Amino acid sequence: MKNHIYIVLLFIFFSCGNNNDDESPISNVDALTVGDLFIGFDTLNTCANMSSSLDLDDTSKVILLSFFAPWWGSCQAHASGLEALHQQYSNQGLIIISIGKDLGSPYTCESWASTFGASYTIANDNDRLIEKRYSKYGTVPFNVIIDKDKIIRYSSSGVSQDEIAEIIQSLINK
Image (cartoon, rainbow, N blue to C red; front, side, top):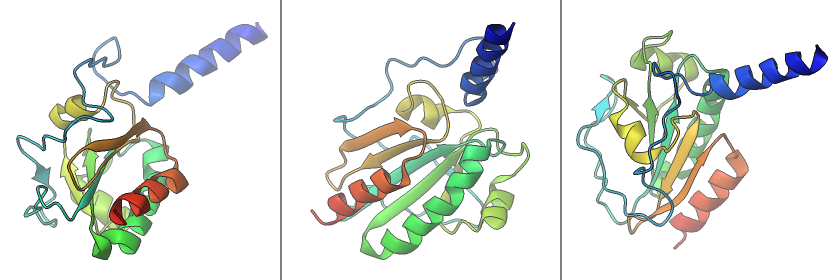
């Protein structure tokens, strides 16, 4: 009985980070990964209070894409870390774009920025088109770092704030 409880808890833990309407998790074999060229976005629906005039082709900029779901506690906790990175590195050439799915459950794009003090760009990806391009499994939080030459240098689920900051610092200094 005890083993069955552990198995159920493990199933719940691993399935909660992926909120798909499908019965099976996203498995996108075509998702871009480390070493691939950043191809940008077909559209980027930024929050009403955010700048939509981002020059993502600027070769003096490093880009951090951070995928989140507003209902997920790990993503809520990660918001303050993103704000710290934004405050520390935005004047040195870092662009942060936090890309939310399921916005409106419970936070809208704008209420997320207000509640979590986010001054970096937030985009709505409720249709998950951007997520499918950059995330193989659709888990959140998920972070992608793109260097000045527009090559993906980091792509990982979860949050490793120190590792992310170290990579950003090294790419900015190149």
